Image 1: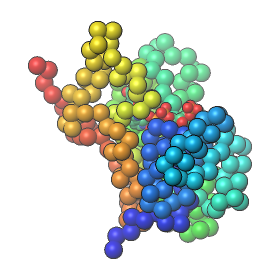
Image 2: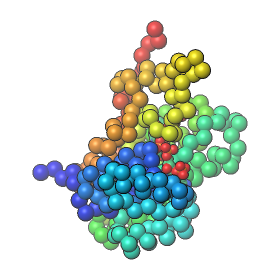
Image 3: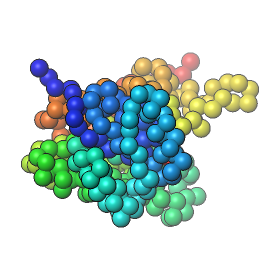
Length: 264
Ligand code: NAP
Ligand code: GCO
């Protein structure tokens, strides 16, 4: 019997008060996991706790900026003391700044790299020692279409997500012998607050040009939803994927396979 269950596992999903992280955490809970999440502000953690409760999930929330190693180490220590060793880590927290590269300041570039690449390194480094002691662990890094493709105005984000793909492969290479599997999920274009600016209706009520562009680039001819990501995430978090390591699973409706629909 293939084991997709997460019964008895402790899952930490970073930046999971809402959006993709929240959806993945609810899926993990439905598969039996205990849910722990963090966000950068107490009011967002409180909002997240209420949202989980509304789904019937008794989650635990911590205020933690994932770019700050001391905060991350303290959070992981508290989780291990109060709940248990983290079996599943999803490095989900992320930001994007859509600015033409030559208009971007080094500080703005660094901020994106800090959250989207340095933080997965920091949080993974904090949880791996206990995973080694426990004899197993799952790390899932939330990559992106921009782990493979570039586009205007997202240079820092693409650099970070491309690096995150290689960090995923390196963690898989370095810690696979300890029964730790590290994989990525590469969502396509998903309807969340992060992509809301790309879907805003125009003044005349028409669709945002980028919205129409993405629909034409996606064989599924639609934006993804967070629901589309739940099954792939449970698979990568479960024992069913114990021989999958260093892989980025693209959940993109076929964007990466498709040249795009010819404009009418
Ligand atoms: P989102 O709606 O913007 O949520 C991002 C979450 O990360 C928020 O809860 C945010 O908290 C948190 N966060 C940001 N910086 C943080 C920090 N320093 N410490 C702790 N938490 C922090 O984004 P999303 O659309 O759900 O995306 C989640 C992940 O999927 C990101 O890594 C994103 O790059 C990736 N992704 C998204 C898409 C998409 O189409 N939406 C596609 C591919 C990949 P605050 O609200 O406090 O900032
Ligand atoms: C953008 C979007 C994308 C998505 C996602 C695609 O501005 O192009 O925000 O970057 O967030 O990463 O996979």
